[in-house]
Length: 215
Image (cartoon, rainbow, N blue to C red; front, side, top):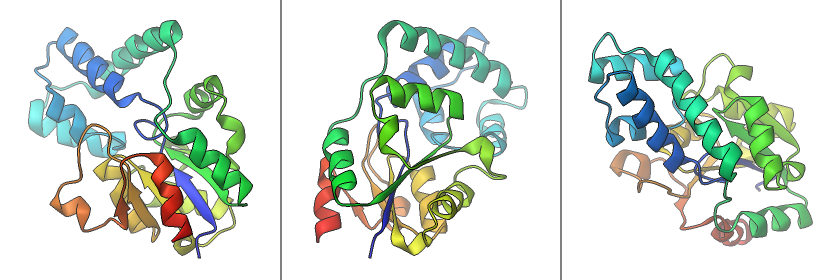
């Protein structure tokens, strides 16, 4: 019996993963690093403590993660301040359904709390969530299970009674390790063979989650 649905944010609820790719690349190239799209896809939802050694191994020991990330945030913030964020298909339908049927809801995101609240408030969706949990609130970020376990604890719900919605392999792994029911809604890439083994289901957009809850 699923009592709660826990949402990732970037690439799942809001269409920001394409911006993350664009501005990671712009920032890295401005700093003199030969980063490509695959490097960025590999660190989606990945905590800094895991992303740093991964990128150093791929791009060289001199890769300055925090310098590049700081510039990426600046560039992306400038774009979002000018143009806003777009929500992903089916989000409103799913959130209305969950509210009407009494499900608990939470956000579990690698993005910091201030930006998370700002982004969701800008599309009038923040009010739908009972709890918001961000990576800085836990010891280990995704793909460790901490953020999902914290979200379940704050909802006073057992992990096995939670469905977790994610668009990235690192997020799916985090939810799986937490003992939740992982559902993938792909954004920039389809699940690979390893990710498929962890999934309860994979759906095309958020509205299809309703069918999973009903059946």
